[in-house]
Amino acid sequence: MSWVLIVILIVPLLTSLVCWWAPALIGQYLTLISGVATFALALALIPTKTVSAFSGWLQVDALSIVFLVTVAFLYGATSVFAIGYVRSSGNKASEGNYNRRLFAGINLFAWSMALATIVNGLALLWVAIEITTVVSALLVAIEGTDGASEAAWKYVLIASIGLGIALFGTIIMYYAGSTVFGSGYELFYSKLLSGASHFPPQVMRLAFVLAVLGYGTKMGLAPLHTWLPDAHSEAPTPVSALLSGALLAVSFYAILRFYQVTERAVGPTFPRDILLAFGLASLGLAALFLSSQEDLKRMFAYSSVEHMGILAIGMSFSAKIAIIGVLLHVLAHAPAKATAFFGAGSAVRKFGSKDMTKMRGGISLLPWSGTMLVLAVLALCAMPPFGIFRSEFLIVSGGLSNSRDFIAGVLIVAVSIASLGLTWFTSQTMITAPSADSVRGEISGWIVASMLIGLAALVVLGIHPPGQLSDLLGRAANELGVGR
Image (cartoon, rainbow, N blue to C red; front, side, top):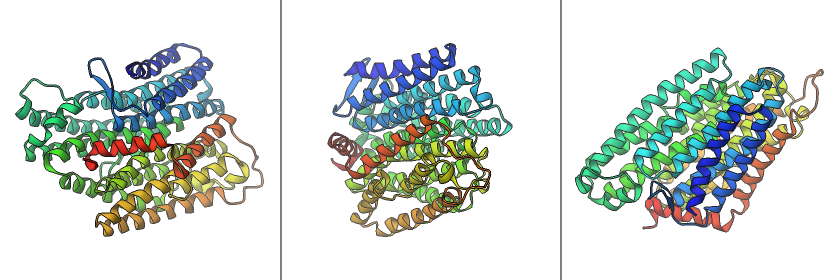
């Protein structure tokens, strides 16, 4: 199966190059084909245990496959939405040059995130995530407005500082390994894990804190999240979906790789307490800000901060069921947030504004996408039968089963407060009477199709995840130290 890893990395990269030069229409369909093919190849890896290529420089295990499937799904779903997005615009988004740059960037962005999940080693992982920063910053600024340029510049500054800290953490990790392996070794995951129990504990604590600070910046953990609302709000909607559903997850993946090694070196208590602190701060801040948003896309950006906090808190619980819930949450958050952004894109196109005070009667005017936007919000609020309900139920169950009742209670309360903010503003926007001069009708059938794909995935994950996927989540949890 090593050829699958190579194809997954070649196809989006080649598609990006073709999109840059080919007519816009060809680029749209090639992106769709590439996205669907990448997702199919990622699914083919689910039953496998470990697959490697190029003498181990490329390698996936259960943990990395979880995140690769997440990225690949978002890539495929976004490629469907992006076609409707550019075709529904009556301004510069319909120009060929803009289309070529957008679709080339989407493919390159997906490639860089897939690369981060496939490379083997902390050094290569840092390089891959640095590439995602460069590509995504250009995509945030692609509209060329003052707001987009400012958001991209802020993103680059904050993310660069964060990745500089993460690089320092990687160097510290290398030093810790050199006390066991000598000065000439590769930072392969298996190599680090094999000697982690002999690494200097204090050095490992420092490396982990630096990794959480550094990659937590890209993940959107408070107080390092400040770039996120601006970038998500100003970026084109397909880019917002990829940023929120995939890039934040890939940054969390980087933290988990450090977590694996640190847990073996110093025990589970220290890394779990660090993640708990950042998780509680993120969840509390998001719950506060979700109650005062008027920008639709900005509201969903703060929802992402909330869900990243849930992931961090979930990792602070020692029960295996909680870790499985965290990994399921990664998978479920991607389609939920993408569907929400797809619906937001449809609403923004319909009303000509991101200001929710100017949006009324969304369901009446957008019978399909408006209704599915409401369903996506309910999914983000952990309502059944969607996947986030199942994942958060598992996380809370894990907290209650390992004597962290108080933290589990705080999690429930904060999520409930955040949900009130989401549902209130969405109901005011979608479930109200439209103005008399409004025109009823969908913006694009492609947008409706992309949202149907996302909701279908959420229902499958919520009602009964496939057996092989459940087995994958169990194996990934074991790799994070809860099954040893």
